[in-house]
Length: 115
Length: 111
Image (cartoon, rainbow over all chains, first blue to last red; front, side):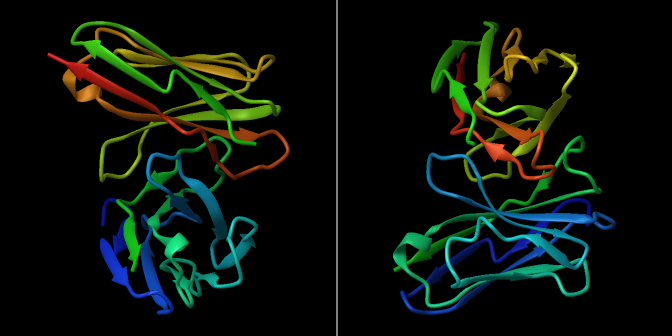
């Protein structure tokens, strides 16, 4: 596809359930990022992949959050034993290679609501 | 590490100009500007690299003062389509990749 694709667009889960969010980056983009965006706030960095290597996961809020990109393309963000504070929009972004001087292209996000 | 944006919100009449500021306490390598409409993805506007350059995109331009770690986004002769929330994202000189976003500036352009 032409842009970053995320699915599902909306996800409602009960507290304690596990969820999996998918990101399909722009073809050929080496770098992939996950962000969490709370209502009325800017995106907050969660984790960064360069190809299949997770180079930085310092932004993941707890060990309930896990991300992978096994073949260097599609990525999945998994949240185990969800809690209400996990409710947010989860954005995925990709860039060709170096982020410092290249744009990140964002998907529309997955809006996660924990009941 | 989060940059500070000002103002928090702006209301303009169509055709008016606006300036949005972004300030960081860290030495910056680059500043990235995005616009996000409600329920949509942030859309890339431009990147400014250290060197104090100014870039333009039609009636939207920006500057970057690396000595002051500040960037400004200039919206000229605003159009209704400019409405949205503007975010600056900064890359620190010593971090290499992570974008730190401000809280955003909400811009509303009215007829």
